[in-house]
Length: 290
Image 1 (cartoon, rainbow, N blue to C red):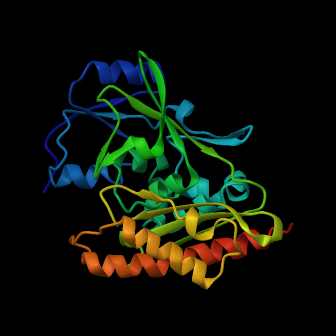
Image 2 (tube, rainbow, N blue to C red; image 1 turned 60 degrees about the vertical axis):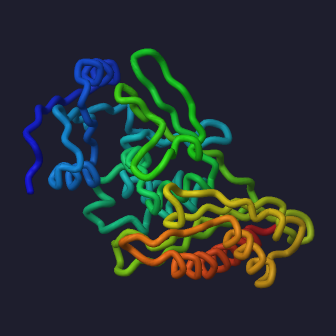
């Protein structure tokens, strides 16, 4: 199929973007287009106007502001993977984005676009949930900051109004002695994940876990964070502790059958990947030294 006819507008500044969105009730922003264009081809999305933001340089940045890493919504996957600042400050995000699709998709797709699209197994969203990110949403009336877990509403739906724009993603930089890991399984390399897991573990005195964050994709209508602290905090993390954390996740989740895999298989897979990710993150944290 081909998309329904549409008008096209290119903007180079945020004020021009806000004006274009305000002038049309059925407009869609296009940046990388890796999700929007296929949806238009199948007429799942039928915008009357496409607003091209590739010229808005204010949305394409990566920088550190104190204890936060700030990423513009237009930053492309491959640029983030290649960024020394991201690799140093947020290795979990670099690792997760390396699993996104194929080179052509990573070269063109944007992290901001993926967040707004909100596929429940998108690697970026899972990593951002684990990292405790927040997003900046702006319009001509001003801006607001929303925790990522609140921004994700349900599959393909986020807390953003038609005339609003996601402008920036802000991510707290983990504690110095922290390790991370990302694990996922897909039917083929580049396919959407059946289940994926992001883990962040901080280690304190006596090599005991002082903080832990865990997020999963593919097990619910959005990426979800799970509190597994009771199973691991205050102890060295071994296979038994990781298994207990996996049992907590199993008790708190209820994966459903979909066109990718059955719910019971997802449940089993989640348990395996949770244990792998937590142990790998702990080993990574231990390697950072005391």
